Image 1 (cartoon, rainbow, N blue to C red):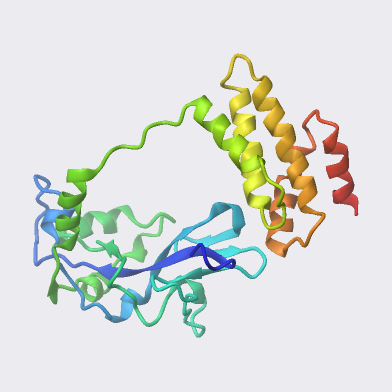
Image 2: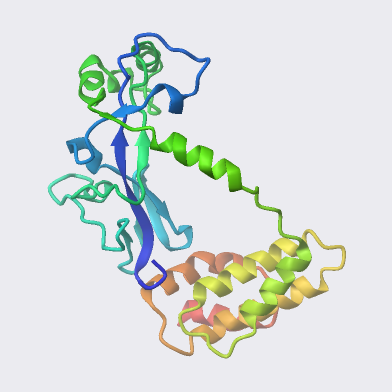
Length: 264
């Protein structure tokens, strides 16, 4: 994705898992252990996707499946190709066809056991509509054609090597600011500089002596200004415009130059 300047998200196809023919809920075991049968890889509803997206280039979240991005950016599938949306659908970007599945998928446990689905029907969807879940939908999504315990194998192998990430210290963050703001190149780095500004602002509230944090915040603002000396993409300008109201509240001389960009 890093090689594609227009990449803004990763659209990951579903793999729908069924009830394993379980009528009752057995809460002594987890979902991953209980439901190990699913639809075939390219079954119809597996064209649905969930998306991992870069929040700084999102214009708006349309629904839980996908977002709209600034400046012509778009999501990719697992192969690095532009997401192949289903244009005939009312939300075409909520899908990717053909289904991709050999590198990354989202396991989708919609039905679980019949008892759990009954509880789900009584609860209703997140919009409060109880009719959202019905017997016909259970029968359609209750797919058990193929055995798949891959998630268990992955989980067990990952547990052997997983190390929880350590919180980054203030000193580490200051070093990262120094590294990212020590540059002679400003074109195409609007997102980096806006992120540096946000990190510096965060550090101002965490450090007893926040002199360095204030210094890097001002440097980041100057870098943002210098970005406009070269070509600025639509996405970068939208990023800037979204952050500008907060930037204009800051007490640095460079803010007046940023204010002029708003009026130009």
